[in-house]
Length: 325
Image (tube, rainbow, N blue to C red):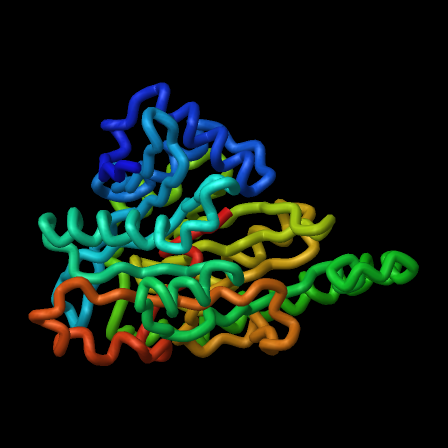
């Protein structure tokens, strides 16, 4: 076996063909090269790093990390977000194969000044990350929701006729919040750890065609519509008023989505350090898919700089940082 670390633009057509096939076989998906490349280029650098495990000329394992620029108390540092991994079924008996790819990425990224690996592992890989990769838990990302058609979300088919009435009152509730936001326009509190946000970042991050963007005067917001088990979900990715998250921007975004899109629920996934009365925080027992944030510190010499990283309350982290779909 051989492991190589390559940048997105260094992969050959033959490698892409095998990578796409590996993804589709491993996760029962129907992804394409174009979709993967779009993900790996959705950052200011315009590329990602990939560890590829070969047996002879065959790709048997693959994992990727996306480069981002973060802030810690106004001091910038370079971090990588782990994503898009697979090992072919017939090679999964080697528990250390993925660890070897991960270590190869760490070694390469240290050369380029990256300090931290971040990850949002799924249920199957979370324990592996803690035990084999020595990842540290930060906490599960919270969910915030505004159900438009409650019984559609609860999958109570006999009660769907009531949803028309509920949708009317939700729209009224949202409009009242929007009006009130002009007087009570709360701003998000600064976080100790956050992304470096620029127009260039937003343009790169949400370049894929499945993201929707709207701009209303000094308010901008991005969202994505996804069908989740027959529930039409609008994921609110980010919302800004003059580059800052505000209550007015949130209400404007939600009102726009409710009027324009025929959706069942609006979801915001991630930390939300802001007073607002529109979205309801989802109790942990009702969260459909836990999303644990983890990290690996690469820059051991400066570890004191990141000694508070394991506290989720100090993070601004959500779907804007990652989108695992």
